[in-house]
Image (tube, rainbow, N blue to C red; front, side, top):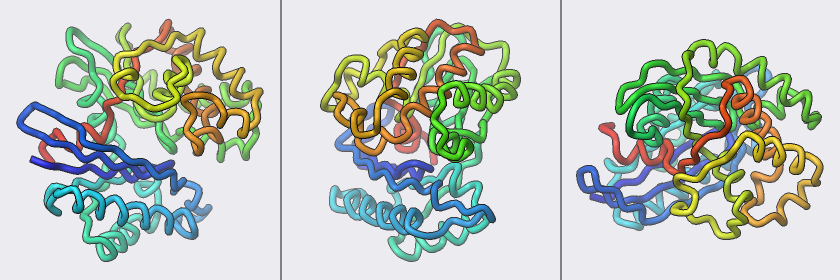
Length: 295
């Protein structure tokens, strides 16, 4: 059965089209469009302007690509996360998208978003944790097998941290602020397991940079290892480079270059406070969950 998932995130809109047969999963293609929806969230909590328009256009384009690939409308599973969840006019945004491209969008709560990340990336054999660093939120989840013991959604991701700091790219301010926001979440999901998996664009990009992966290959990302020392070195190195210099690095997506140091700072703060020497990397995330889980 062909299924498609569209993730309407705070930083980007992503598409996965896959052939699903029971527990068997065969990805056919993935797409990403960095629309920065969260940048269109005004001080009064309304989504507006060019970011919202870019996002609606990206959803319509991805819905068309899914249909062209043979996916029926009932098997296009679209979901929205933090930016739409936080917006006063999030419901109107969802209605507008449905009217423009005929896609029904499920608005995930922070807890649901966390559970999707855990379903996709959790390691077998005993308790483990998953951290999902997004554009506007960071989910921390602990559990065993398919059972989630504790989950927390912190209101900070790479895009939101940059906005919180007014564009200040001082590493020390990034680390101080991210630690303050993450602390309640770490307390909420403690005791922490000694095995953690990281998902989403910040973490997969840091690993791609580590191995010099010029062309993204999910098979080479899946199961990789990032040590805390490596991520700390990457944070200071990336922060010292201009955005244009970062874009020239093998493994750096063009639009990710603007926010990669903010995302890296969140990961460093988490690893330090959690007392972890590092974490595993997973290419499987909420897109995988959307095509595989009962919807």
